[in-house]
Length: 93
Image (cartoon, rainbow, N blue to C red; front, top):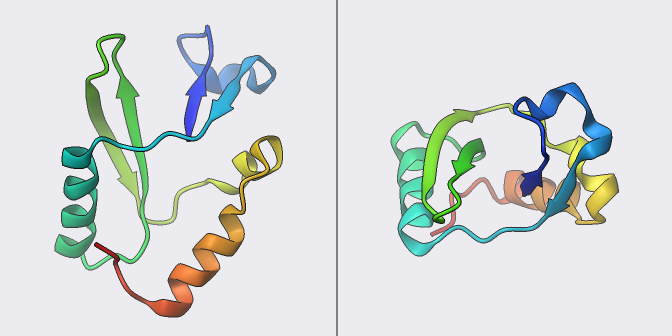
C-alpha cells in the first residue's frame, strides 16, 4: 500500500493521507520473497520509502506489522488475503 502525506512524519495526522495499492517492481518483489525465505517467514509487513525518481529504499520488515488499519479506507480484502496465506503456509513465488 502506498501512503501519501505532505507530512515528514505521516504518523502524526492520519487524516491527511491518501492510500493507493502499489505493485513493487520485479526486482523488489524478488527481493521480498528472498527475504521471507531467508528468515523463514510466511508474512512480513515491509516498509519502503519511494523517491520522486521511483527508486525504492528498504526501511524494515515487521514480521507481525500493523496493516489492518489500511483495509477500511481502501476497501481491499487484506484480512482475507492474509488468512488465505496463513492457511496455505507457503511463501509464494
